[in-house]
Length: 75
Image (cartoon, rainbow, N blue to C red; front, side, top):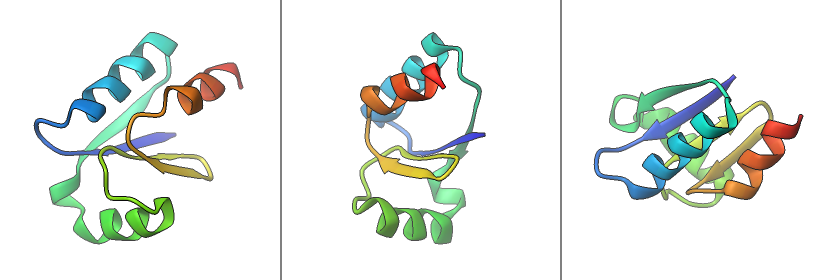
């Protein structure tokens, strides 16, 4: 399961959703403002608060990462 924590007007969030859609990968989008404690925890793990914060299995990253999405599509 892939979970995206997004915020309104976030360009990298939109780019990530588009890339996941193109790759045919299912995901759940969550408004980051509704999950402040989880966002803070994930931001510490990812080392950044840039949106989106992405959880894909045991991977956590922030921002648009086309390379990581491509790897998920191959698995």
